[in-house]
Image 1 (cartoon, rainbow, N blue to C red):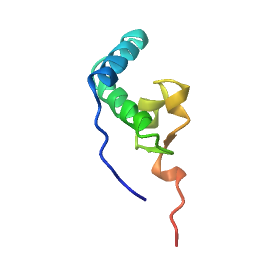
Image 2 (cartoon, one colour):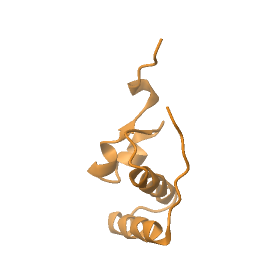
Image 3 (cartoon, rainbow, N blue to C red):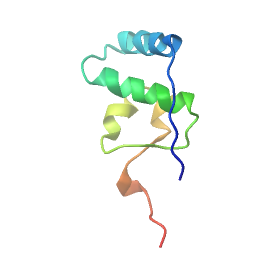
Length: 76
């Protein structure tokens, strides 16, 4: 498993703001949308979270990436 940093640019933040405005998402949901945007930009296979409902509400393109730890099998 590898980790790397993702730099979001102004255009990425504008996309997030456009999307949360259309979906009427406020408060902490905006942070979830920023995390989701970074996941999309990084072209991840999985967005691992303890709160899948926070991300699945952001659209199918995010929901298909969302997994919870209980969904994962650990190698022996």
